[in-house]
Amino acid sequence: MSEFTEKLILPDIPNLHQLDVYERHGGYQALRKAMGMKPEEIIEEVKKSNLRGRGGACFPTGMKWSFMPKQSTKPKYLCANGDESEPGTFKDRQIFECNPHLFIEGAIIAAYAMGVTTVYTYIRGEYAKWIAILQKAVDDAYARNYIGKNILGTGFGTEFVIYRGAGAYICGEESALMNSLQGERGYPRVKPPFPAQVGLYGCPTTINNIETIANVPIILNRGAEWYWKIGAPKQPGTLLYGISGHVNKPGVYEFPTGILLTDLIYNYAGGVPGEKKIKAVIPGGSSTMWLRGEEIEGVKMDADSLKAVGTAIGTGGVIVMDEDTDVLKVLARIAHFYHHESCGQCTPCREGCGWMEKILNRFLAGDGTMSDIDLLMDVANNIEGNTICALGDAAAWPVQSVIRKFREEFEARAKKSPTAPKPVTPPHLVTTFDA
Amino acid sequence: MLSKENFEKLERLKSQYPTTKSLSLPVLWMIQEQHGWISPESMQYVADLLQLPVSHVYGVVTFYTMFNTKPVGKYHLQVCTNVSCLLRGGEELLDHICKRLHVKRGEITLDQRFTVTEVECLGSCGTAPMLQANDEYYENLSTEKVERLLDEWSKG
Ligand SMILES: Cc1cc2nc3c(=O)[nH]c(=O)nc-3n(C[C@H](O)[C@H](O)[C@H](O)COP(=O)(O)O)c2cc1C
Ligand code: SF4
Ligand code: FES
Image 1 (cartoon, chains in turn cyan, blue):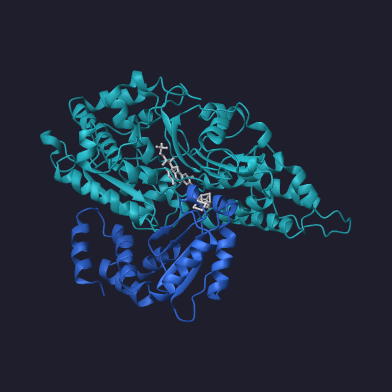
Image 2: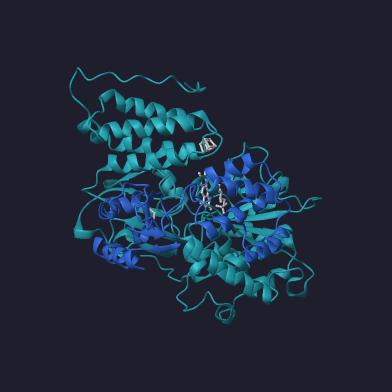
């Protein structure tokens, strides 16, 4: 087990969501400190801390902030991403519920560091309860002059607006999020230009995940030196691990990055019901590549360690499947999800996701054939890397990994009869250069 | 069509965004809260109110799954069957509800009291299986628990 056990983001303090309680435990001290620093010094400190984004792509936060132009004739924006729709992910809502002021404080510090005039927090529409909790916290922070035109009498001002989504996974993708905030359909944009140049309303914009921003006051209070010693050096800090599926105690657990996956499953989440064996684990939300049960021994939960075993930390949402799980059924459900959520702009994603779902359903109905396995892989390979946004990749990765790791499940379900009808091979969508 | 309260709210919201287009989602939410769904007439009304083409409003309403384009029951039951819920009985829960209410997925009961919808992950995977009834989450469900909820909702 890990030596560092302090909970930084979700400490066990009753009623911490209330401003008075938050202040009594040192709340908004980081903001005061930040206001005494130069904006560049804050960005430098965040860079030094090695904080990496918690929204899935693990991008270094300080570096992202430094992309924002120092001088700009246009207003600059920060979009806080609380769309949280990746299956297996349920951590940001915990921050809204238990420690909303930590996030608000981090967002105001970020706004000051980047010269942002408005912070827009985008929250998925289903989170009505958590939107209300956050709105109350924001109103209280306004009343105490932590947000507003002249924050703490420093002359710096920024506004804080909450925007309610209306049900669309794709709006978590940063450029779709900006379009949605502009009152449009949530279509991802072609990049470049990147948001730091042309973002929300065509102005310089930074997008960060809620958990990422919640780390900022901690870094300022304790210092980057202290922060980067926690957990895995290249992706330090604590992480809100969400664990679900076949475990005795599913939930959100805060531990340093780099803990053992087996510790998380067996020591913290209470192991598998009925002492069953594990068949498969999805380590970081539905978009990440699967691991077989036999592979999880010794695997650490941080970006580099998971990359080394061919998958990713993603959102830190671990899904455990016991030995009795029908992996093809689970994969078909995931394929259905991506098909349903594809915005339809790119042909490979729009059509390919549908084909993958169809082929997988053929296997579930007992109509799959041996050649369908290769066809499925082919479709996935032709989606990956050929689309505007990463939803296409996210749809392809689980399929590719399950074919690689559980081929025998497909073969066992495939029709053996030589008279099985040959499936019609769909035309290739795009010619890949390395083909 | 907007209530007086919502009209005032809208006035306050205007200062928060540089364009009126951004008000599309907030206004549609207000309409849905008042009427339960967004009718073609409502879309025209929103278009006029925000001075946007009605095609824009229609495009937005149909893009987002939470906007109802037909009336829903007094209780809109949205059951998640995505991975984590699937692994903990979400499918069975949904089937159970449909059977008891004599509807198929996506349908409304004859008495207009319930609409049952299958939905994607609601960010409640650690407390699966679960459902959302209107704006409320009901988590860690079992058939017994859901039976009790349905009994209650059938009365109230
Ligand atoms: C299809 C798709 C869905 C995404 N959903 C979310 C989400 O719900 N929340 C989130 O923070 N990031 C999400 N992301 C990642 C964002 O695009 C972006 O990388 C992230 O918000 C940046 O924040 P970070 O640097 O703090 O991680 C999604 C990406 C894709 C491609
Ligand atoms: S990859 Fe899929 S979701 Fe992303 S822009 Fe293309 S069609 Fe839309
Ligand atoms: S999978 Fe059902 S709430 Fe996430």
